[in-house]
Image 1 (cartoon, rainbow, N blue to C red):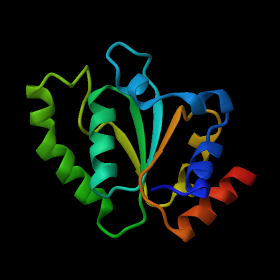
Image 2 (tube, one colour):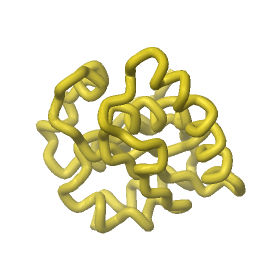
Image 3 (cartoon, rainbow, N blue to C red):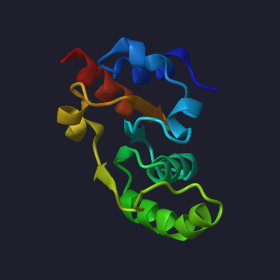
Image 4 (cartoon, rainbow, N blue to C red):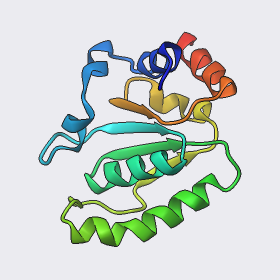
Length: 137
């Protein structure tokens, strides 16, 4: 269960508050305008969301400070991509079409008006402080 603080932090990263009402079904629907999505966290859920967003052709920025996070993400995407293709989910997309940053504050330039959706799938106090600091700039 997400706390109100957790949800609030993710929502405040969106520069245009009207965008916060996007629903994930809209984002993954076929033939929708491609979006720029920030995925915070690359655990099992973060890797899964990243793979799905990539398969749908969205621009994805992924952030996770954990050691080996990028390698685990790459391995997961490569192993799941053939399955995504078999079931017909992939739409003019490539499995490596994402930007990875270890620290969410490294994506600050991207956060200035270019993010349509934030999918935060992990939570820790240190990351919450970083997200709050970005929001206040």
